[in-house]
Image (cartoon, rainbow, N blue to C red):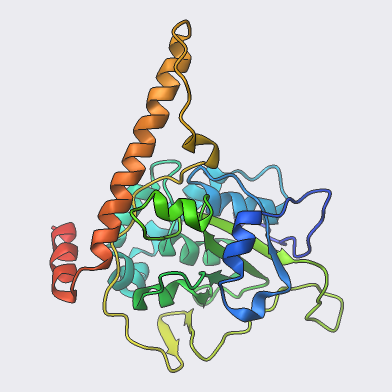
Length: 293
């Protein structure tokens, strides 16, 4: 049974909290988003699904349900997603295995799949920070696969749980997103004439719109390289401060050790991802081939 998705489109101070860190990142994104504000969601690896749940405003729908529906969609239409996106983010079968683990950070496959699940156009927004060619695909409008017709529009931004300075310090001076937040209207601008407060999804001439089985291209450069899928969970801001280990609390000691282990794993994965960002096209093809084997 399909979900009924009628997303919240306007900021409500009684329900929403502005993500001040993401607001700074939004300033470095495409300039036509000034009327939108980023809303705070939990940074636990399920942030893309938290964003949808917040917009859905339906307590009966959980992040776990959305993750399972995403897996089913990707498995059902595996060939389509492989043909469309594998050259950017690696084999879809590898991605599906990662998605099966709860709290695993989401990427392009999940965004594309959610378009079908929600019958919705999703504008994916990425701040122009340390921009590389492969990142252009992150800044696009994704649409459902025919015959599904979108009945609404939402905007999701790639962000980070830390401010840019701290994020760079944790990742050897480089920045890459590890968080998603929803963008909704501040209520200042209304793009429709009939009172329907639907967020504008205007596509600039530098973007691609992914629709059905083809890519509509408008003066878009080639994408020579792309990092492989990040199999990681987001770093929660509160977990970045080292906690003292209480000698009389065994459960707390175990939790602290686990937090430190997760932080070390996150740093290791970020270093690995940073090295892949500088690989040549030949090195990238070799790596992707090994993943398929």
